[in-house]
Length: 137
Image 1 (cartoon, rainbow, N blue to C red):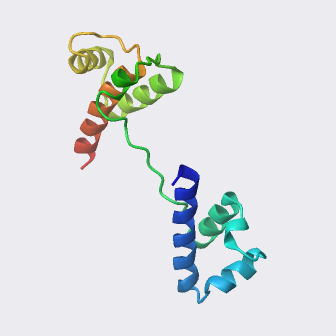
Image 2: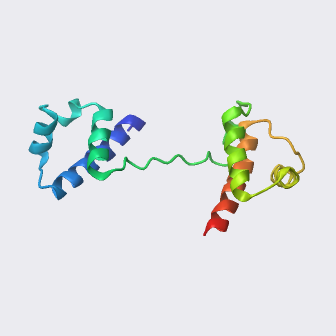
Image 3: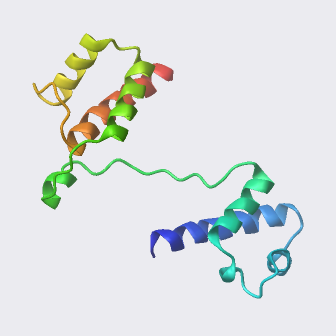
């Protein structure tokens, strides 16, 4: 099952559950969208309806890559502006100054104090994210 199909399956389950709360069955949902089959409804319309009913969309989370994934793929990607913005935000949440940031990065990267690749970013960010979670709990 592809990502789009998995998303649509979650949307269908959520819409049927919310419809049941409102006394709507499958036929009523089809009539609401004006189609013979709900599979003909575009994904963004399903998301809009769910958000209109619940005030929320589906929770979509994306886990960090598995440890060592970048090394196995043989492909090295350089860290970009988005990664550095994410780190800057996480460091500001942790309340770290420049010197503390350098020490934290060196600790995570085993002595290196510069983030060059996306794999380096994931190593540093996963540790920083865990630290921020513990601090907020």
